[in-house]
Amino acid sequence: MIRYSFLPSDYHPMVLMLGEASDMQALSGLLESFGRLPRDMEFGKSPGFAMSDTRITLIPCDKDEQLGMH
Image 1 (cartoon, rainbow, N blue to C red):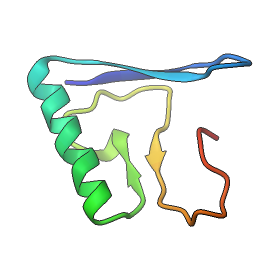
Image 2 (image 1 turned 30 degrees about the vertical axis):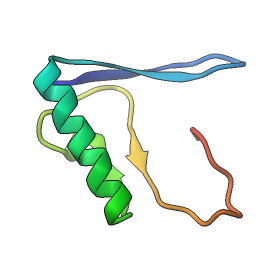
Image 3 (image 1 turned 135 degrees about the vertical axis):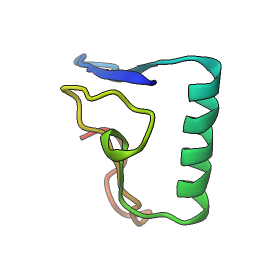
Image 4 (image 1 turned 120 degrees about the vertical axis):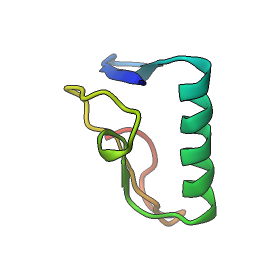
């Protein structure tokens, strides 16, 4: 089970993810599938992720759009 949370900062905000090696391999597969077929993807609704107070959604965007964490 992957546990995750947002670590706010004025200069370098981060998302911390903790899990076993097999969990991280599953995360790698999830990100790889997002790279092959971009679509909105919410981590909390994916199997293997613990519920968190942090909502992480990957959203594909055009190169002209603002990138990063919002």
